[in-house]
Image 1 (cartoon, rainbow, N blue to C red):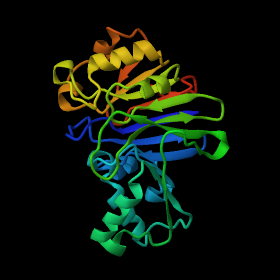
Image 2: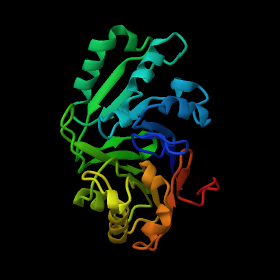
Image 3: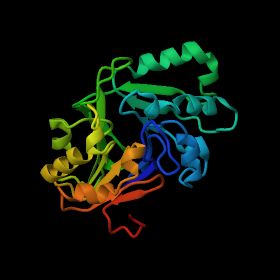
Length: 270
């Protein structure tokens, strides 16, 4: 089973219903904090999915290193520096090349304030073609997307999650239209895809409404969740607009929306 809890369905500009990126992804027995943008830890704890607070977190994945996708790394490490968390096993961070250098720059600023008190940090830089195995037989595989970043890392990633039974959930990260996303999304059980702007505000390196519709019409995922919505997009009925180009199930996420694969698990779905 894959459970995709969207803690932040917005972009860099927060609204009451769409805060910056944050996702709590559970693949079989393993939970992953993905793209912890500003306020991610607070929203995770408020969601009820982390009753032990930061002690629930052992894997953190980053698609890229823009602030709205990684700003809560410092609060996470600062929380782990406090005497409250009790776990002693490592915290594992995964992200594109440049993640280790970014962490070193943060250490230059904060020093030992962001050194976990009881847990070590294992930092793994990954890219296309790498598979990260998960307990129980699942895995995470990154693919490169079209979202330029001129500092810290030169590549940005999307992720393909596979559970032990072969179900697939794909997360686009931030990207413009690209062949790698189309390939990863083809036939997926769930596609969680950014839908940042209406067409008239289309921005290179991001997906507009029509671009999402064309992607879905070509890739034919079984279920689509629209996320990373800037205010102008969030104010629209995005599911209806994408539905003009794609006849499958499309849902417009807000903070707290949960998507589950397979959908007949009995938990509440949109």
